[in-house]
Image (cartoon, rainbow, N blue to C red; front, side):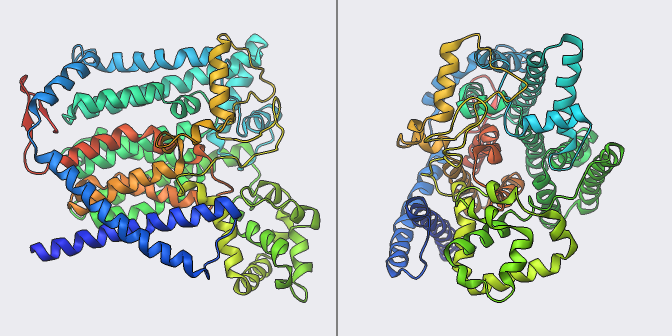
Length: 559
């Protein structure tokens, strides 16, 4: 590729990134402020063009800066930081154990402070399914049995619900520490700098969002751990020579893929879409790769199908899949009722009555969708699909804004997470922030052993101050973290480091699925926080353009 072609390609990639980022900033600000984007506003498009041009120049300057870091000699500075970071190494034989113990020691005080843990986000519903033996596929059955079964089993032995919840939290902490220790072991074998590994382990041990969900009963943590293992497999597939030569890697790929799909339904859809993309990118071993993917999907279907049959689980719910259409119809009913003509209102009332429609809130679909009549919808799906299409053709901008309002927190960096504002739960009422659930749902009860630390996490969960601090707020923001990953992706794409792009596939595909969800919450994109150390390592690998530097101990490190 000639110099002119490279320049054009670089401008194109930077331009597309900047255009999307500018649109996110401008659209998100309007949604945040007035809950609507008027695409007929000429000023909006003039601002979009102006910001895109400015950001394109800034992005290209940042890329040049990063590229220069890969070429510049920084031996003295690198050695200094390597000596500091070496405190986490000790000896190679104990590094994995020490990483595991470090993480447990970081999380344990918080666990004691919020004892028995954050039993929240559908936790009570999952427990009740096991306690009453009345199962449904509303939540992943594997997680329902794991969480509810552990609580019920421990309660029978000890007559304590709190101890059962605590046992689940200890299990999840142990699983998380084990997966993270494996990640750092892998990065050490890939000769990733100790500095990056030190930053990564401190991040996972201390950053509040990571700690909150590691100590939370929601399925998101186990789902994300399985996803992280899959990402490691994909990185090895792209950069290593051993993936298809070692059965261990292939077994991990199948297990992690199946686990990801078992713990979240959107993981299943993302994995299915990922398969043809992987086959296109990895043409050399297409047959083996296809076989592994089929094994993962088959394993998921076999386990889910078997559990559903054995437990006689009810699968008659449709509202989770129809979250966006339900919200679109409800918004149109509220702001543009003239779109419903003739028998349209009668058809709408069959699945959503007037009381349900009156509960429309722009940022959260739960109040309306929970009252959706699944039985009526199942009797004539085509009739309601035609209604949705007919109304949408009349009011497409209303439909767009309805969708954007439940998803803009995933792409607007300055979003304040307050989708539950005013809702009363077991022990408190959400006020100006609902970043994290901070709850112990019944039958659990909060029994803090370190009250002052419990209060710290209460404020982090339910107060808005952290989302108002410049720069730092982006580390807590789902939208801010998304653009961090998108920037890294664009930079690697610009440099032609395609072998490092494999792990981005499931990340972006799952992100696309959450845009179709009921609202925007950090829990749905927990992978942005759990997987950050891996992507910092990928960024460092991206700096290694032509050669690797050798440190004084003879270890090859990415500079």
